[in-house]
Amino acid sequence: MNKPPVIFIAGPTGVGKSAVAMAFAGLATPEAVEIVACDAIQVYREVAIASDKPSSEMRRQVRHHLLDVVSVVEEFNAARYRALAVAAVDDILARGKQPVIVGGSGMYMMALLDGLFEEGGASESLRVALEGRELSGLYAELQRVDPQAAAKISSNDKKRIVRALEVFHATGVPMSVQQKKREGLWGKHDIRIIGLERPRAELYRRVEARVDAMFDAGLVDEVKGLLRRPLSLTAARIIGVPEIKGVLNGEYDLERARYLIKLHTRHYVKRQMTWFRKDKRLQWLVPGPNETAPETAQRIKDMI
Image (cartoon, rainbow, N blue to C red; front, side):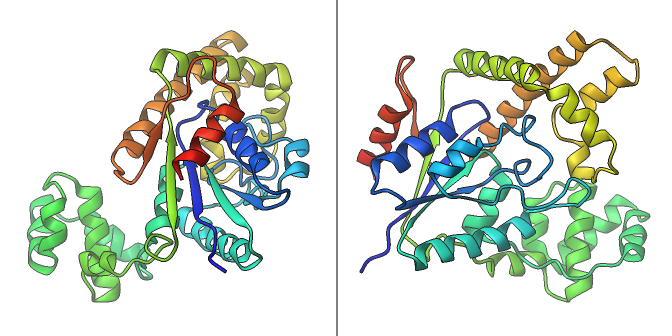
């Protein structure tokens, strides 16, 4: 029996991905679809409101994966996500179900689709030594040991130059060669990637309404609880955490925090769209202003 296609429903924060994914699952035979979250924040167990995590009712209706994976005191990255997500997709397909990957993390989506290359165990001392050298000398060395990588990196981008040299010195293999060995789901499965998009003004209205709803749901208390823990660097940067921390530190009032969260979320949406638009594999779909999630889901089903 042929395996069902692997569906990605991608797009920026607030575009309506979760509702559409749930509606898409509702179009299928009961329990035939399982959702895999592709979200850098929803992996944290203690973050429900700030991550706009699917409700317990949604999870009862459709099985979800990659939610509540780690605590906020732990670091989490694309490599760890990829390992867990690949295992989830393989398991879903092995049971004859259809995986639907849903989320707005472009880095995680790329890791799952295209894989990641191993950078090797570069030491802190190597990194410090490289960072202490003159930029011109670093770039000249990169041109010598990995000309393909050098051609893609600006001669002024010291961070990326150091990273490429780290890879070479730690592994003995140029980064450009290792990148070509990356393996992901792309090319191994029948994959359809649907990008949801809305007019910017409409999307910003949805984002701002969602922020207001988060405050109504208890965002401040959730963040207070998070700040009692030794947050990892990634968890400490969750939108909502630093802004409300400013209120608790007496730097500004709650309305200022609300404004900043809306502002920073809009900026994040712009970065998400910039990332997704670079990937020409996405098939874009713009829901109508009065279009329901089931109607959008039907359009996706027709597309694939």
